[in-house]
Length: 324
Image (cartoon, rainbow, N blue to C red; front, top):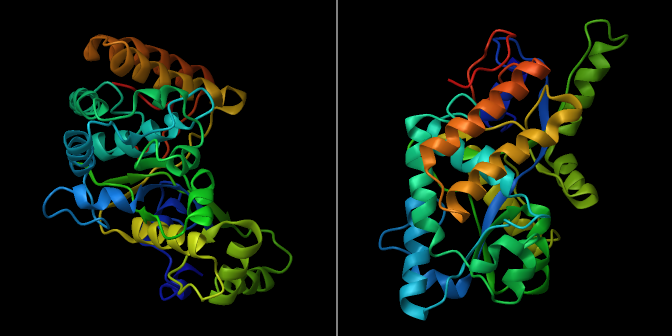
């Protein structure tokens, strides 16, 4: 069936995720949610020279923050680093893949050391109150920050309440690609399905432009295909949707799945990434030492749960994912 959908406009990166690390298409993506950047239009005048807001690098984000701080004396970058924020998704799905090419196997690699050196450098331009932030739409609306990273659902109120004041931006690119974490909803057809032809017809129906827009309106998940947003779609939703589409369609897109295979212990991996960030960036710990110690915790978790690697890390052949 996948061969029949080559013109459906599904990003190749998403179709690859549907293969579950194999050569077989196990499911077809039909909708998505994800994380992006939002920026106050006031900040646009401080963009680094030559920067393209639809194709920023992580260095551009840092330099953007520096330019804002140099001009205003204020630290206006924002990340949801509070207890109720989703900072672990930034680490797992964005900065780690962008700098190491994976989420797990490069956790304590030389590339990860370089990555945390960069995050340390960038953090001087992040609002010090970021450690209390949970929903970045609040700080955008209060003008406490001008450039913010968060889940689309945690940014949408800024676009709804002040649609003329904000722009939505795809995630930036790092040395290994544009790391991002899509929350993919896909449909699979069991081998013993009583009506596989009907199931295929339903998948094709789900991928029609009209259905994709209806899904967006009714449940807030963004299209998995390249669709035009009609005029009745609220501006904020359309702005986010366009950024989401650009992110997924990037030629160097590096999608990272949510951690899988950990069962009831899924929260433990998030704590490991957050602890590494806290110890290195907030408390000034030695990068290599912290990564070695937290890497041991990560390896223990993966071995005790038996969780094999998941994208963007290479397949571990069913064995617990290694943390070299």
